[in-house]
Length: 126
Image (cartoon, rainbow, N blue to C red; front, top):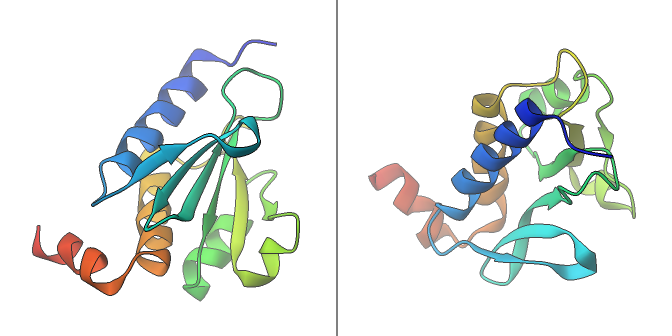
């Protein structure tokens, strides 16, 4: 099943943003793309081959952002117990899915939560 073009563009913007954050790297554990900082995942980008519903998973500790993310169509606490720590899976495909800009804001919050303080501070200096 092919990924719709607009969803792929949105995913590519989010991925590029995540990998543009200070010292971010991409790895492919479990066959999916993840962005890491200091060897810790700050966003699960999933797979873009159509084998699984298209979405991103971010760690949102800000109550307002977390609640907003969960109101998105199809959004849910992340599996494997990650949801208890604030991780939310947000699908990119349904109508009403968040824009790339909103997703990038959430990626930045997730990065700030996971990254060492010295790297997060570089975002404020920019």
